[in-house]
Amino acid sequence: MSDLSQFLIPRGFKFGAAKAGLKQSGRTDFALIVADAAASAAAAFTANRVTAAPLTVDKEHLRATDGRVRVVAINAGNANCATGQAGLDAARATCSAIAETFNCKPEEVFPSSTGVIGVPLPTEKLIAALPDLAVSIGSEFDHFQQIASAILTTDTVEKTAFARLKITISQIDGPGEIEQEVRIAALCKGSGMIHPQLVPHATMLVYILTDAAIEPPALDTYLRDAIDVSFNRISVDGDTSTNDTVLLLASGASGVAIGAHHAEFASALTQVCTSLARQIVSDGEGITHIVELRIQGAASAADALRVAKAIAHSPLVKTAWAGCDPNWGRLLAAIGYSGANIDPNRIDVWFGELRICCDGSRAAEFDEVAAHAYLQQPEFSITIDLHQGDGSCTFWTTDLTHEYIRINADYTT
Image 1 (cartoon, helix red, strand yellow):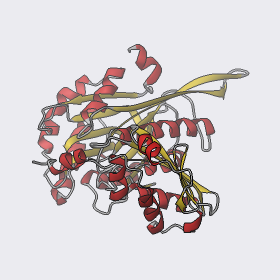
Image 2 (cartoon, rainbow, N blue to C red):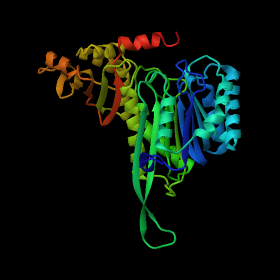
Image 3 (cartoon, rainbow, N blue to C red):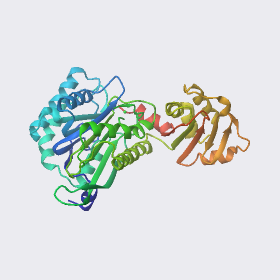
Image 4 (cartoon, rainbow, N blue to C red):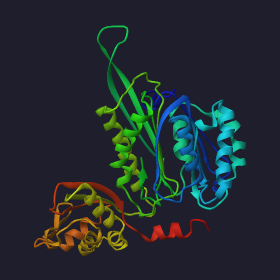
């Protein structure tokens, strides 16, 4: 393996990608993640009630195997959503072909799709690509990167994140303790149709791999906790995809068993998820600004999130950001209709270190020229203190530009 593989890639997995002919560009569009043996799995899916066929199949398969996955199959260029029974049949046929190829049960295959909604999935193209793809998989870093490239749609960059941690374990056949390494590697795609609302959301697909040995129930708790402060804290355009999926697999190949409530592992997983979430926002369709919203002093954490989402989803606010316009009144309007418990006369707002609003009115020190200059930065923060309690949250979002409209107006034509 390459040096990067020895340091970054979790043991117990192989990777590969191929051109199945789904993308009009002719680029790679079919990818596999293959575990050496069935791995522990935990997954979260979109809260959208219109869901793609592979998500239905995934839920069935995870129930059937008690949370075990041998092969992850991802296609880009076709969402396999709003395709009726034919879509379910296509997903299941693909799983059956993969199961035969890798000598596992069809229920141990986890399919994912991303692309255009409402177009039948040509599963025969995926099946035809399987033989060559199966012999080309490998465990090197380059193979991992092939997956990150193959799953992209309107994305402009690949998105990956890694973590390594040393865990002290007791020796079974000897005295004392030793340190063992656990690795986490993750990749994702997503740049538009991004407002994940995941239940423990172009589409957000996330695949996180670790070589720790973790049972599915504990893995599920780790995943849900990490999602809550990462993927569920971002929005590009306020649209929740039909295909959003986050999958966490644990191969156990490191030999390090991790139970519930392991703080170091939880922290590393959260860091990886947060990195990917921010990369998605940074690659938002047509964006020119990345905005970190810091909501504090809310009556509850839920209220803080309500305020953040109201601001992040406001076309008036987002277009003001696109124009570097310090129109803070739009922020107050969004806060007012957010549904959060507020006192309009106690709201403070800062753009970075610049106080813009004090006690619900224009701050005495408000400097419009300085505020305009601050918003010209490609990344900036806005802090809002509601003075209602201890609730807080951090949320990442973007502006809304002419380029976003162009990309999505021409998406299928």
